[in-house]
Length: 95
Image 1 (cartoon, rainbow, N blue to C red):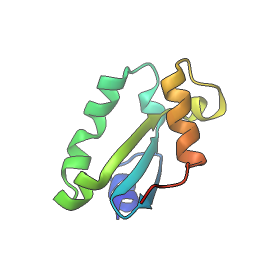
Image 2 (image 1 turned 90 degrees about the horizontal axis):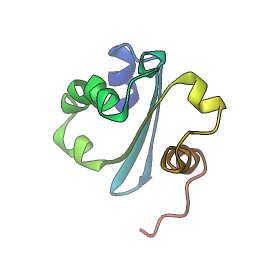
Image 3 (image 1 turned 90 degrees about the vertical axis):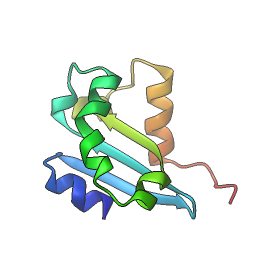
Image 4 (image 1 turned 180 degrees about the horizontal axis):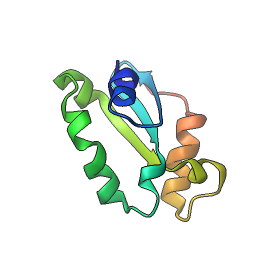
């Protein structure tokens, strides 16, 4: 549902999965994020996240917003690197 809604909004690629019973992880890959800081990227997707059911919104605990080139190259920040790595290779859930 999350993927469908965000793809319909025009984002290039959306990956989402339920990490455990209480959390969703969402990654949006779009070239329009190029040159846009984190706050700007958040603003670009906020309307679409807000249109999701309240329970779904509450379950999104990891929202990764990257450009296609950032998927192929190491992130400039350790935080960005870890978020993307954790998305692709999740650590075991404690739940």
